[in-house]
Length: 141
Image (cartoon, rainbow, N blue to C red; front, side, top):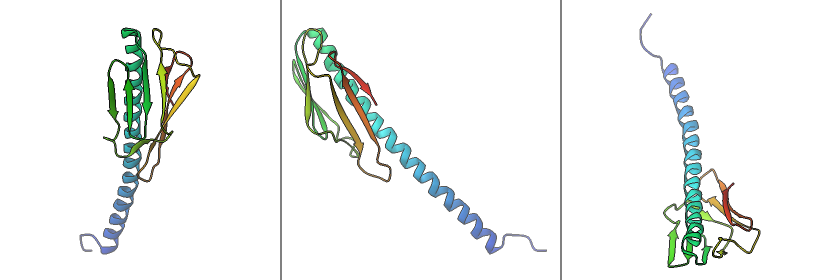
């Protein structure tokens, strides 16, 4: 009996390793898309909450508007938050805005939705930022 591997055994091992690599690649890409959209979602929530707290703190009205790749916060000063650092995630709910009125950061609509989508890759993911109620609280979905 000779020692070593036969060609058939080697091909089976290569096929198994290739299959495992393909499965792990898909899982890693899915995880990356989820992480990327969650990062942008949290950035949007953070910036809107910052504007809300400025309304309470400074006592002036703030307007938060959005386009596909940026948030524009106007109040004491105009601030643009660029979301294009993530090439993959865009706001797909269209251009819109919400105005927080001083002194209690109330809004005049019952809710607004900012929809985010991971545009590229095999795993299209969506997420939402909800501005809800007269108080304009911000939630993620």
